[in-house]
Length: 332
Image (cartoon, rainbow, N blue to C red; front, side, top):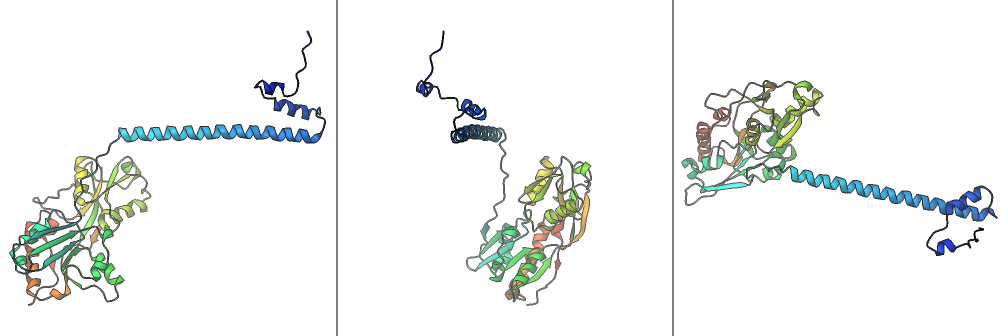
């Protein structure tokens, strides 16, 4: 039976679009009546092809993003890391017992936790002769505004020498502080509970290195990082940062890190700092020092503050802070 002819547009009318690709093939076979309609059909076909490709590309990208987001959410739920308990780095204040008198402002830029500085100063009868209150600010050096040194807001400063040197270089007239007493020079080493560390990829691979989160720290950041970089190992160990030395040492003994930088000093049996022998990185680093405001030189305050430093040394739990050298004796 002879099929009835299909009028142009009939298929489209029934919801079936005309096969544009068929028309293109007819153009190629020179069945089109003219060149211009043929070109138009080719363009339409190409547009449809690119439209489909773009659609599937967008669909693929959307699916990939959705899978990645879902995986991230599942990972976040699976690993809940407890935040480290951090020391309050604000200002601690306490009363000395005196009914009158100004406030003794102290800056601790070494963050010596074991010395319990604020209470030690407040319990000193020598301090109570001159001050009714002690305000102790503990801070990291990278958070310290050097303008505080220019404004001379503190009567006493505990800091590494490079901090005061930086202040003196940035302030034309220098800083109004003199060195009162200084602790011994010390060295830097890497220690581990798994034996003496080695600067080798074999030893460090898979281990976690704990550092102080302070780029200005010479012994607990700069020296160990320089040692790794000079040995081409700065990408080998996983680095975990801690805010304080107390957290750093606790992490080592708790097994959360495998190796840490530590002071190289002779610690007696009564010291709170007991570490195994380590890998020496540097033997001589200038120790921290106490700095006194110049206006207090050769006054009774100078003498009493210096005597209080001696009392602090007697109570220190770490041998390193039990020994200091007086560099500016009082002469009232």
